[in-house]
Length: 117
Length: 110
Image (tube, chains in turn cyan, blue):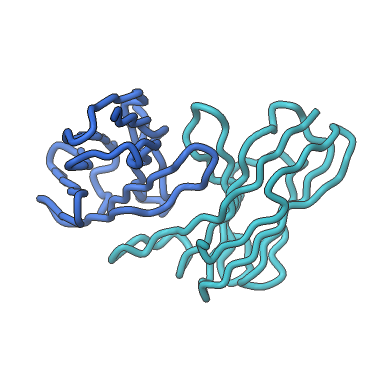
C-alpha cells in the first residue's frame, strides 16, 4: 500500500474510445502528478497539479486531458489515442509541487497499464 | 547531454556481492538526489535520498554523492536475489522538475 491508489490497473481501449484513469492519494499531499513510462525510456512528466491548480503541462497532446477536482483526486481523460500511447501511466503525489528539499519527493501509485489497439 | 544519465545494464552480480550503480547529472545547481527501485511490473518506490557530499548509509544500501564530479552512486552490499530490479536515479533540475534517468537493471544471481 503506497498511499496512492490508481484505477483501473489495466485498460485496453480502441483508438476511438473514451476512457479515464483515476488516482486518489491518502497522504495529505498538496501536489499530484501524471507520469508516462514507456519501455526502455525514462519516466516522462506529463502534468503537475499544486493545490488542484495545473502548474505544468509538459507539451502533452490534447488527447490526454487531466482533471483535478481537489488535492486528493486526479483523473486522466483519454480519447482518440494512438497505439504509441500504450504505456504504464503513473500517478504520484508529493507534499509540495516540485520541491525536493530535505528528502521531500514524490510517491507513486501502482500504475495503470494502458494498451491501445 | 542528457540531464540524468545511467547505464541501462543489465548489471549482473552474484548473490552476496556488492552491486554498484552509477548516475551522472548535468545541472550543477541540483541539491537533492534520489534513488528509486522498480520491480518488474510495479511502480517505482523511494529507497534513498542524499543531499550532502559523501556517503549516506541505510542498512545494506549506501548512497555516495560527489557534487564536484556530478555523480551519485548507489552501493548494495550483500546483494540478494530480491534486489533484482531496475534502479532509477532522480535529480531535480533548476526548473524544479524531478528528472529521472532511464534506470539500471540489476540482476542478482543465486
